[in-house]
Image (cartoon, rainbow, N blue to C red; front, side, top):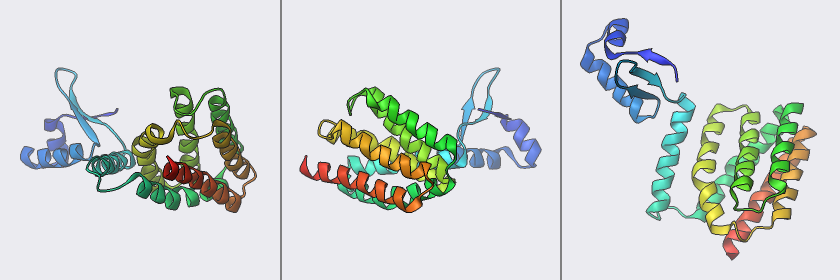
Length: 205
C-alpha cells in the first residue's frame, strides 16, 4: 500500500531514462508487485511483497493447468502431501503458545459449521495459514498460498459434501496437539493422515 513515487520522481531518483524505468515497472506489475494509480493522488504503489507476488504467479499458473486439464486434482493432492507434511513439522519445531492458541481458535470456529459452508471454509483456510506462518519459511508460505487460493476451493467443490465434519476436526485437533507439544514427527504424522483422508475421499467421490 505504500506510495513509492511517480515515474518522474523514480527516474530522477535512480538516474535512468523514462523508457528504462517503464520497462522495470512493467516487469514489477506483471509480477503483481506494484500497481499504478491515476489522477492527482496517483502514483506507483506497492501491491504485494515479493513472496505474495510469487504466490499469485504460481496460483494463476496452476489455475490455468487445472482449467486446461493438464494437471489433475489428484496430482495436486500429491503435491500437497509433499509440501504440507514437512511444513507441519517445521511449525511444531518453531511453535509458540500463541500458535497453538490460534490453531485451537480456528478449530473452534469451524466446529459449529458443516464442511463446504463459508464459515467452515474460512476457519479451515485460517488453520492452514497459521501453520504455514509458524513454519517460519517465506518460500514455503508463498507456495502454501496456492493451496489455499487454487486447490482448496476446487477440493471443497468436489468433495465438500463427502468429508465427515467430525473426522476433519479430529484430524485438525491431532495436528494442533502435536504443534502445542512441539513434536515435529507427530505433527508430520497427523498432517500426513489428514491429507491421506482427503485423497481417499477424492478417489471415492
